[in-house]
Amino acid sequence: MNKIFLLGLVILFSCGRSDVDKLKFLERGNIAYEGKDYTQAVNFYSDALAKDPLFVDAWNNKGLALMKLASYDEAIYCFDQAIQHKPQYGEAILNNAKANLAVKQYFAAANHVDQLKKIWPDTSLVFFTDGLINAAMGETEKAMNGFRKVLELDPKHAEAMVNIANLYYHNRQADSAIIYLGEAIKIDPNLSNAYNILAMVYVQQEQYDDALQAINTATSLSKNDPYYINNKGFILLKLARLEEAEESIIISMKIDPYNGWVYRNLGLVRYAQNNYEESARLLEKALKIDTEIDYIYYDLAIAYRDMGEMEKACQLLELAPKHDENEYLLQELCY
Image 1: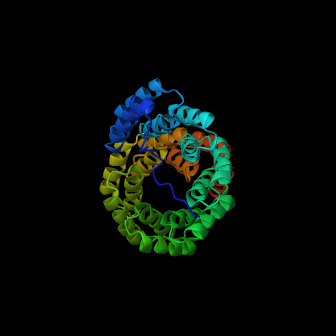
Image 2: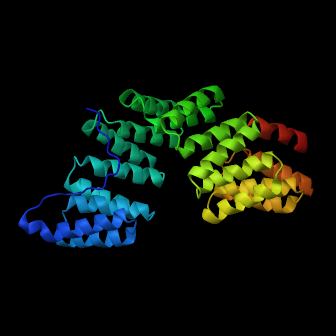
Image 3: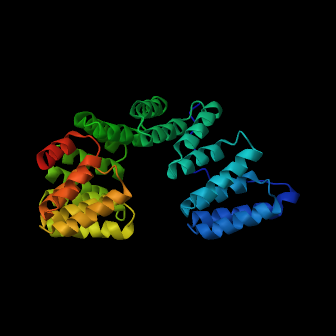
């Protein structure tokens, strides 16, 4: 049987007389959670646990509320407590995997999924989470296998299709990515990330007008998503619409100031405006946040070059990953 657990929030419907107090607090916590008052939900779940420290459902639900507050370490502690007192508690194990994934503790997340496969061996959500973890670890083949297993169990799982398309996108297999994205959109035309990835596939193909149309759909479906807004800024940059690009990127930066890609993109805008010093400053900040940003060493070295800082450019390229574009620029500028 293919079980799907969509929320993970545990709700109990009956109880013995001695459990009335703790269940009242659990119910109040659940009401606060559903009303998106996550701090109050945590307080109510804590009250339930004060009545019964072994109340595993309160531990699980408290962990979920803490995840909504981005308090992932505390959430992991709650899920650990739930699992300690109920080792076969599938919902808590799944939630623990998701919390560990959120803080990039990939091996811990993978261990929880391996445990869960023994409890829910035919559950698509388990293999979907497994795919996400392996994708984050750079294990493309394992991730692909996980998402394909999801489609075996649930052929209409649109999010699995989007994640398969994302793997194809990163492998520069645009045709395959577009096929899966098209199928996902047929199933769920409101899946904003499908349009976001489609936009970036079009960017790879230098079809910038098509990319803009796709990213506009993504941002209309998820109006405040900082990643989509930043991607829109990048596409507008490619279309040489610099003022609009800057506006989108700055909006994204205000929502999420910790995303290195926004500083990269704003740095590219400043470069296009011939403001090389400001471009270099922003690209340096992007590099400090995330060394894996596409072409970050190359772009920063170009900014240094155009500032007349050839020594800086060469020092940077000597340290850069040995990609073709970095090697060519190193040879061109420094030897």
